[in-house]
Image (cartoon, rainbow, N blue to C red; front, side):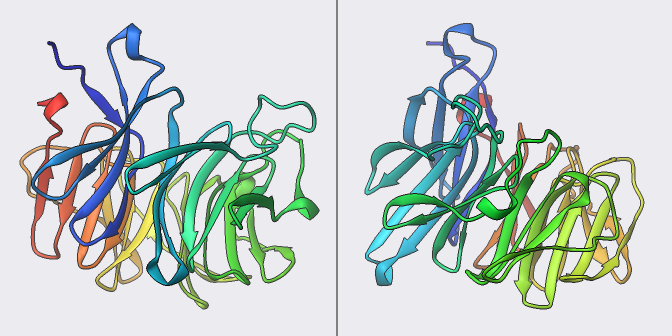
Length: 304
């Protein structure tokens, strides 16, 4: 049987050495609408869920109830969800999310993230949802809009009352019980936010935008390079990394400088996730891991 290569869509590491990756087969019309979820533990690839009929936008992992509850969570652009607990998938839907609903239509879901042991999703039209008691509740009714060109690509925070959501038109919104629009120093699309602490928040986006600070107090970090846009920002071993499409960079002083992975070739990059002394870089074609000393590449068997 011929192998069908896959493209990686996202990635999340719930514990040291393990990563979950939703992927989509490419190059075969019979499977172009089917997706899969893989895990990798540094030695072997496993299939958690295969042949579900939407392409996940993001993946996260929720641990709650003192560790009694543990599950992978995937979300699709129309609000489709998969909860995988103890290897058993449960399919669901975020009510009102996506473009398949009757009006009002706010747009696609872009991300899902676990923040302080609670699960959030965000997307177009400034949608923000929180999983409460097994049901998704809208957290952003006061700022929702059906206007095109508004909405969130990412959300992060330190607690349920210290959340940042970023997206179109350079918008940075902060939630502390109610939403406030930040006076952001850019109008570029913002793609990723990483809240390390209450006063230690990183935001990246198009045109090599990289901001550091907190609500209404941002410093811009200068970046040079060939890649136009940043898609993910992550903190790892007290350093800040940003990923573009085919390059990775790190903040050095007040500048952003390229990272040489010393792999002898360029690799695709898009998403970053640091966990327990390891930094994962997930590109459409490549999975690479950094332990603080060296980078290692891992090839999926379907792409070998």
